[in-house]
Image 1 (cartoon, helix red, strand yellow):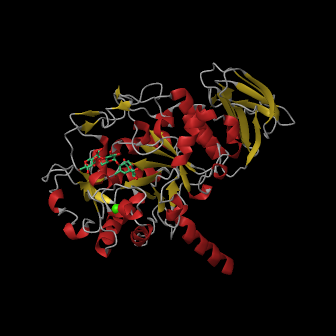
Image 2 (tube, protein in one colour):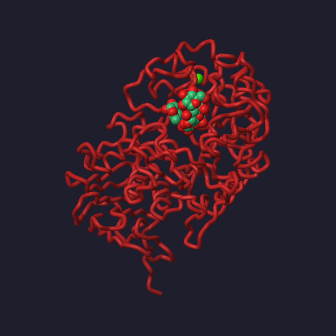
Image 3 (tube, helix red, strand yellow):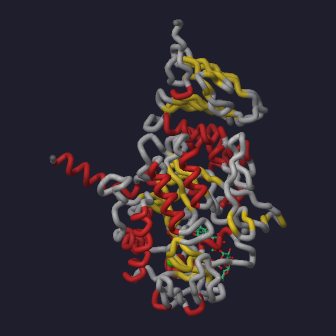
Length: 517
Ligand code: QV4
Ligand code: CA
């Protein structure tokens, strides 16, 4: 009995680090700016059948409508109220999405923008996604309600009232991030309004939250509102399940505020991951894939069980936030697939796949002046996600998560879940390989010459389909076949000119031996 009690206590205390995906599903996808009705469809027709664990959605609460520039994606990071009412849909559509996704075992994680309300310079009125009146100048948000008492103006000590110095931890927390009205989170009233908003979402059935701009909130203030959160809805989650929490904290080192300041509240985004992986795959600053042998904590990343990892995110794929020009995105598809493939094969962290929309990038002096452009839309109404006969998306939705190489690596991660990092090999340069116990093996060639080598895979003898160049369909390989002999070794040949210069095999891509009748 005592052991059960201990296990249940343990279960409760680390639960906020647990994404509560159904067993065997190990990644989530950020369906950036998608409509709720399209997410519900995608859960049923694609994400569940392909083993995705959940979806990070764009902020569902009412935001400012910005017309100059015209409907930028970032207007959704300027809250006006906590009404579930945005261009992605209304509360009924939101409820329908959460129910339908949960019913097929795909979780919903909400992007919670609770550090601030809208920009200080925004004009008052009802230019909001649900028509609520607000007056930034007077700090008046009657639909919450928030008033001047609920903001940090008096507390901020910077000259402009905005964050000016990222090494002053008081400014970073108590001043306005790029002019966004900063909430007074030491007040129980404000904490309660935020908890009320998040509990409303928990009642509907969400599994957890990305907490936006966490660096700009005191960890203790965050803990105060997180402790007010209910357990998850028992229609889909076990009794006592705590919401999964992952906090957006950009810490590339060198700042006063550290990711580890936030470990007590939940997981934290590891921005070093994408920045470093991009540098290695681009072979900048003398980096090479052979150095990935000790990837993870060996590269001074946070502990794996606190990390939320990704190759790119909605900010740094367009030059916002952190990571700079090393960040790999869908605009560099060949390297991008290698980066996402490497992330999904490696055991470090809890993985998030980005799914983007295409926008008309236009560089002037090295800066994309169209970095603000919002989702594909018809007079402001977000366009539906159409699906082409080849399963790619139309209407300028990129759907990276549907690219065969990425979808199959999401499945790879599920198949090898729990298996150790084994059988590392490298050529001292940019040809590397590693396995995941006896369940999976992956080989990369990022050199400018052919890879031709026999390697120990750790896998049982048999014929395996490479899931990068093709699929296993009806016990046939549509792509490359790999033959693993009785001693676990197999020959790999990857031309440096290959469309995708990497090969991945796993126990579910192994051909069944046809027994002669
Ligand atoms: C401008 C001036 C300010 C001025 C203000 C007056 O720059 O100096 O005080 O007007 O109102 C948009 C505009 C920005 C404008 C601001 C307020 O780009 O120029 O300020 O609105 O009107 C996204 C975008 C921002 C955008 C913001 C709000 O990236 O460009 O600002 O939404 O619409 C840090 C943080 C990190 C943050 C990252 C971007 O530590 O937490 O910057 N990342 C998260 C989100 C990100 C979002 C925010 C935080 C804010 O991932 O998408 O910013 O919610 O590293
Ligand atoms: Ca703040």
